[in-house]
Length: 237
Image 1 (cartoon, rainbow, N blue to C red):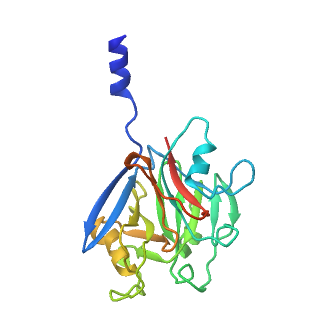
Image 2: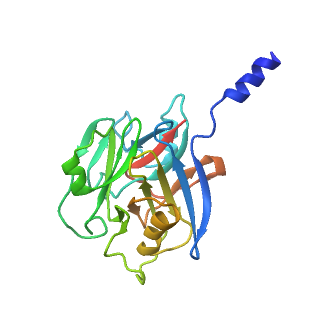
Image 3: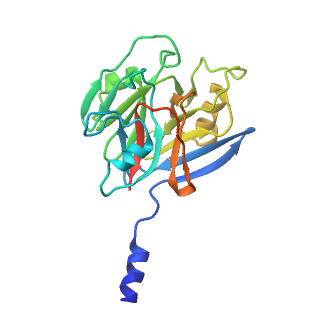
């Protein structure tokens, strides 16, 4: 019996997501790395009852077996918490792709789309997403892009005066690596984008939000609360 228990201990699954605190150029960030091929990364918006989840706790409460081992708000939303841009969950599209320029951060083109499949997670610039038409299981649109093919968004200025707690996601070129980041201190867009490209070495990164930026990392005892959210990205373990 002891041998069997030891085998279970050794063979059991490791923590699904690793989050670490990183100091970079005078700011502090929490970066959570996900391997999309081995971890159950997906989007959450509306529960079986038709109600918007709105919180990490509501997603957890809806699961019979799996636990939410990591989560983050994942895109801008209207007052009724409906996604502002393209939203696809488990193959079902509830909001079309928005390609036109518009007000606010979302419309500061280029913006982008996080595309999740069973094996990959990749950030696409929106027009590239439309042209490429990747077969995503889940997708969420937000903006602006922070990094596009290794270049910082041209309108993100080093001396930008807007400083907020920000969150977003960066991915590798082939989609085998996704890193979700939330700043621990108020930063401007340029500093946030530079962290993805120059510290994490990711060629593409997408901004999620700067007024509603929240992280669920139960391994560290953190689960941010607040007003109800719209789209959420997370890992089920």
